[in-house]
Each structure stands twice: as structure tokens, then as C-alpha cells.
Length: 230
Image 1 (cartoon, rainbow, N blue to C red):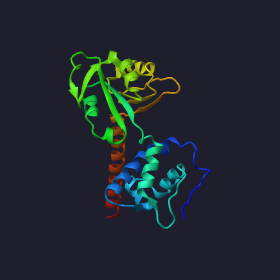
Image 2: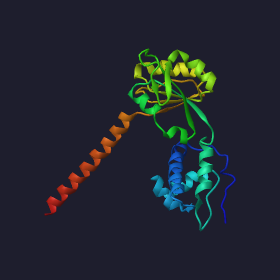
Image 3: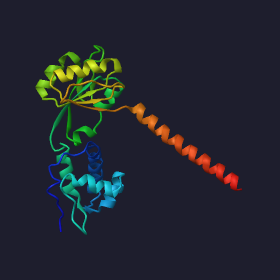
Image 4: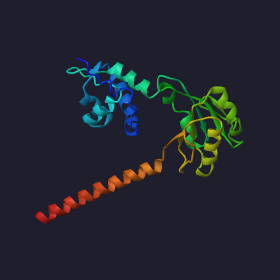
């Protein structure tokens, strides 16, 4: 029978769980594309790269546990998660800073399929203004307020150098944007009610370097132990 805990439905979802929901959605989409109608928590967990117990706990916040003995209905669960994270809606996005990174983001084809519509590219450099990237002409950063009002922009992407990022964030907030994705290597200060997500590629590389160092040290210790026992 279908299990459902109504006390879980409507509960605030922890940030750690919110961060994993896109992973589950991506895994479910891959399963659906492969023609899979149902899946177990173990299979979905492996596809998403988490433990099955963590996955079941995360999904409990959506109020649905699946069907005992059958598993999860892939299409239904995919829709539930997509709705929970707002992917069934259309989100207008503006990208500020069309250097190498901004250019790459502007041409990323995955935004549209996930419910994000890049409506404008802005840059303060007159030499970049007028360039066409991803089908959009780069506009002056001075057009920000007009763009936000015209397209009802809900998300601003900051892809500028660090020294310009705070000023850009202030302008985004002033124009009414309440969600910012920050790629600049700096911490942004924003008022209450504005959410900022930071993507720092250098930090992610440093974390990987740390884990590599730990693995290399463990291998070295194991080799020393083997030599000692020889």
C-alpha cells in the first residue's frame, strides 16, 4: 500500500535536503529517459550518490515514501520534486558580467530544460556591449532596473570580478531581485529576505586536493606497514 505521513507534508525542508533534491531529480530524469517506471530507494540512492537511509529521510519531507514492495513511481516522484524546488515554474534570470565565465553560463543549454530562462546579459564594459552570446545581445549594466521590471527577473547571476560583485549585488537587490547566484570569489552582504548561493570553483578544487592528499597519505602508510611486515 502507499505510505504517506501527513505530519511530514508542509514541514520546512532542511537546507541540506534542499541541496540534494536536484540530485534526486537528475537521477529520476535519467531513469525516466531509460524507460524505468519504478525504482527502489536503493537504486535511486545509488544513482544520486547518497545512502538509501538519507534518501528516504529527505523524501519524507515531501510527504511521500513510495509504495511498499514496489518502490517509487519515477514520473510521479520526479514531478513532486520538480514542483517542490520550483522547476515547474518559469524563472527569469539575468547574468551580470559576460567575461569567460559569464559567456559559458550564457551558452549553457541546460537552463531552459530546468525551468530557467536567461532573459538578459549585462556588462559594464562598453566593448562587450552589443556582442551576441547565446542568442542575446549584451546590454549595458545601466539597463538592469529596466530589464528586471520588464521580465520580472527572479534570479540574478553575478559572474564579475570580486571587486565589482558587491556593487552588482546591491544593484540587483535595489532593482527587486531576491535571489542571487554568486560566482565571484568574495562574500556578498545582502539584506534579510535575499538569498545568496555561492559557487567557488577554487574552493571545490582545494577540497578535492585535501581528499587526494589524505588518500595518498593512507596509501603511503599502508605501504610502510607492508614493508615493515615483510
